[in-house]
Length: 172
Image 1 (cartoon, rainbow, N blue to C red):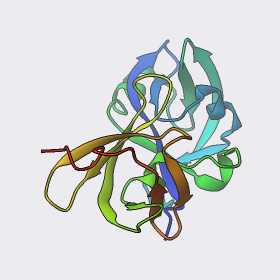
Image 2 (cartoon, one colour):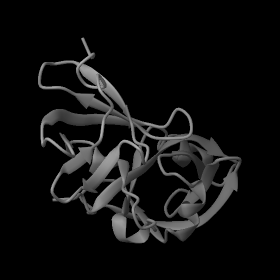
Image 3 (tube, one colour):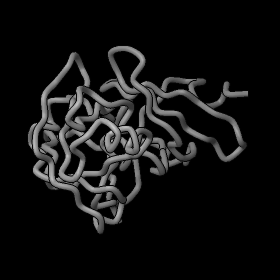
Image 4 (tube, rainbow, N blue to C red):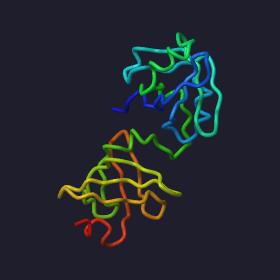
């Protein structure tokens, strides 16, 4: 089952004197923070906090949260994670949340062989790189590009891939 509340960022510092906080965003586009009317302090959606305002400074959102109206109150929030309801985050067709990709089993699109499980997703350049932990205990870095991807079914926890020869066997 997919998580309803997703981690969207970490509070890294204060901004100004009225309690605004700067967030290191864990989303593709920090402007998505402008859509949020409320965020959550927990991954269960039990502790909501109202979003009073959002502005962008570079690629980081500066957010004013209800109940945080001084710099001292903002400082107490540094290091805390914020969560959003997945329904409040637009997602283009064919795109998936990283948190849904992690944990998926990776199978060969043709043979059905299981190559392992996705343990991390990074974006060092122009494509995502999946870290796949193999059953033998190795790590393989798999480029999630159209040429190598088969299908992604996050609800089933399954990704099919079309690797080139040696992509998974030379992991030793």
